[in-house]
Image (cartoon, rainbow, N blue to C red; front, side, top):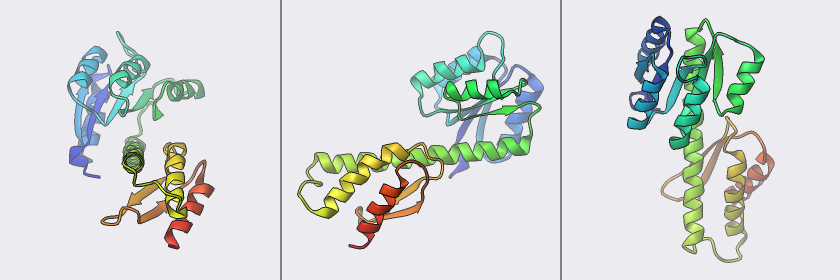
Length: 207
């Protein structure tokens, strides 16, 4: 991951905390914008694509959950980590239901925040790679490259059907090696469908 290309937006109406989180993430090498005004954050997100938004839940004018809903409406790949002074199970569950990647209780543990940000960005990269793989397999199918009754082609088609069920598994990482695009490496996987995926990969590797 090239951290210099990762854009993060920090939103908190408490100026000291907002500046502190921004500085901590800047030191990690990320490009970090910060604002204490939620409506201003929404405007920034409309002007600039962010990989991740780290936002307080309780803010005047626009709550963190409302900000999440509005930004995800036009930037569905942007991840959210919501900070809350009310570190209850209920608030964390509600944040996840609304589509947040995770929540973080206040006072903020900067070490934990840095680790969570890295984990979120790694997950985002995995999902992007899986989407690219599915698109390439779909393109092959549409151009007739997956036609025919060979067992190998059926396995690749079967793999295309498995990928969507696994794309939310944090540990999934499928790499398509060049120049032979049919040569696939399974680095690691977990979650639903892993048995089917393993069987397909084993059969493809044996050919």
